Image 1 (cartoon, rainbow, N blue to C red):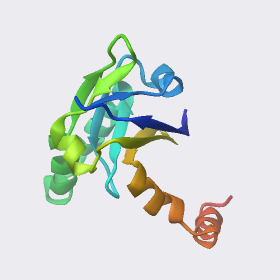
Image 2: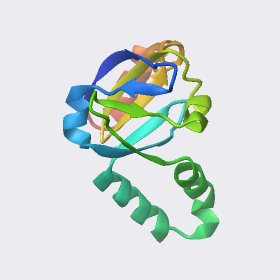
Image 3: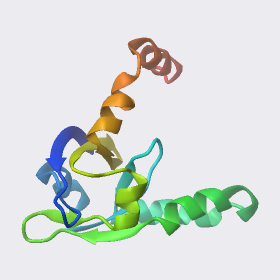
Length: 139
């Protein structure tokens, strides 16, 4: 299970140290793709294969936008000897990643955020909204 919040710095070449705790769960290679709310989604290879299978099963008429969004932006990355990944320029641009980065574990995936977007987005969710969602889900 992927959990936790980690703060890192993106180097000038677009490399990002990836949290050791999350590396243990994801393995040496994983997939980074466009995510929702202006972040990047990170999936382990098994989870990514499950997502691709689900997308292939859906009728093109209802899934084509999601298929394009997730698959066209996907990049398989591999950890270097220092535990870093190289984020492709197109993904860095999509998520407006410049220097200060947040990597968050979100159960079955990790998310990569610019620190400013993280502080303005997910951290601004009201406690009432969280309570409402918890109630709907039976927590």
